[in-house]
Length: 252
Length: 252
Image (cartoon, rainbow over all chains, first blue to last red; front, side):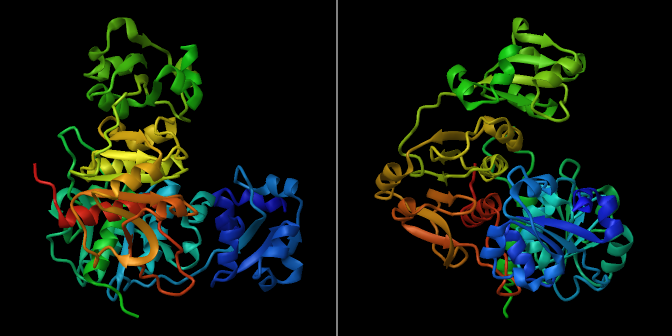
């Protein structure tokens, strides 16, 4: 149980290839997913209520008191269970974006924003999110919680953006969300490609902007000049994904 | 300076009809807005850098050291200035939604979500946000910060939703964002009306659902059945506002 709190730090997550997820709803989803849960710390109520708890070998199931859970939890109000999960080691596929739309995140710093974007990717059937090395770690506990379980379904990779996008731009569109560009509602879009979103205050870095093939904006209808400078990046990403899907709905 | 920290609590904000905003960018925007800044606590750098500081009477401008700012700030990293502002006393107009689209929030609890929604309203030219009494206070410091200044431009009211919407539904559409309803992309929309968004976990309450005239959804394209249960409410609100504006762009 001692090692669990250390997983709040990226250094230990990387070393141990493990991360933490908390709460009845989220952990139930992870237990029902492709992710491997390696340790489970649950209250008696949890083991009584969660139909998926039996998927974890008995030796890895620990019954804890609420006071013990509070000690290892990152939440202000721990909720029945904490799971230690294996970080998946999906091999990176450099052809991502050729057959589907993928998100690319250039230096997203806020864990809530990254979590929201992974959750939106899941909703809109976007299978992968590619993050710059500066982007907050997707296994940061706040990100994991904000994904509401989507972290189990969307593949997230860390990629050096400029070389990857330079290569990618030869074979598929690389859209970038920027202020004051062509409206996404009038621009021609493609059902496949890469959609780049940038940092919360600085937007997409100049180096990445240089390799975009299309620059798109969400038009603002603010009532006066001193208007909202931008949308939250999680919101902007979702609005753009929604527009791609409106035009090219996935059929399964 | 003593009273400032008390404004973290709604009780004192209501009593004093004041709230706090922090940071160079946000305070600069508020100083350049219709809101009245009644006290300004800034570092020397702030008064040197902010062109709008002179809009506040000298007697209300306090030069503070960073250590003092830290004491009254709610931020982990205070940034040059803290402003105490007057809560505007806009009279509530019961005809809201007749001539424009307005947002209605039923029990939104997360300050970041409320801030994001106010910011999105500003971006999409939505002049007013109507909140149920259970919704988090829009002058909560975390909400104010998340609006990124939009709190100065969007009018926010607290309203008893059921009686208001019952009346409103007689003369304009009352849309509700719910799971598994008609797609917003195929449903007929109107350029005016009220758009209701519900609580983060429970959605729109049954009482409010009963008075909706239209139920709309953002279609999900999740790749499997065990999919994202919902979008974040800030994201969902913005995606819906964007679709109203795509169909009925505001012209000014």
